[in-house]
Amino acid sequence: MTRDEMIGLTINPDRPVLIAGPTACGKSALALRIANESGGQIINADALQVFANWRILTARPSVDDEAQVPHRLYGHVPRDAEYSVGHWLRDLAALLNEGPRPIIIGGTGLYFTALTEGLAEIPPTPSDIRDEANALLETRGVSGLLDDLDPETRGRIDIANPMRVQRAWEVQRNTGRGLAFWQDDTPPPLLPLTACTAIALDAPKDWLNPRIETRFDLMLKAGALEEVRENLTAWDPGLLSSKAIGAPELSAYLQGEMTLEAAREAAITATRQYAKRQRTWFRARMRYWQWHSAQEL
Figure 1: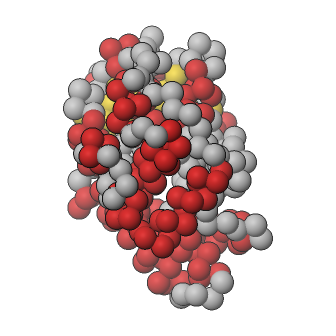
Figure 2: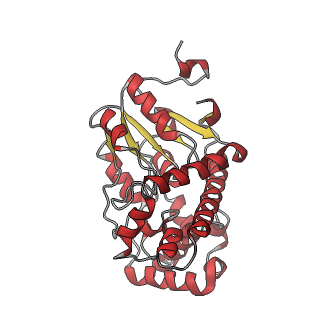
């Protein structure tokens, strides 16, 4: 009996595998183990690990891990590029029938929802509306953007997530219709849940929080500060790639705006808050996945 069978984790070698879970819970290690034991290519489903300018700070798989099995959609997007769930689905579609079976792994719940439930074909946001949204978020905050949304959309999105609120505001401003309207006009999914093995990892905060702290300290030892310093020459906080947790905090330290210890604490706190949002999303949207304890893996 294999280790996975002992904990009730059944992996069909002929079916695509999805692995979702909060940051620092061990998703990458599980995906690598499955790929080595039963074959497959590992495909990224994390919205920030796609960017070429971050490896350490976004906890991308190591060079040694990438040498063991194929890894796709990691670090393939320029730092200053726009990249949405629609871009990701198009990139993924080209891989689903190419090479070994896909093992799709990440913590961006919206990617998995779009993959298994379908994605509304919303027109792209013009740069002037994006600039307007950025300015409003800075001056009015999230609550200011929420005031402009239709009630149906407000009831569906994660209102504690500024990126989701801004996206909804941009869609409504650009198209004249709320995000909820577009979601209701959704085409069939690229990979239905019934066609794959979908695994969601449960990671209680009392177990996960120390791992988050330890991992960030390991990032610092591995050169996270140097990685951020390399990005400072063209730093733009408005870029999606600049949203990498730890990047704004370490950037502030390097520019003399806070101590290293304060930056470290702020980044760890932000990571814990992000993990909490991930857990909330997964519990609400992934009820029909196979749930397994990350502690047992």
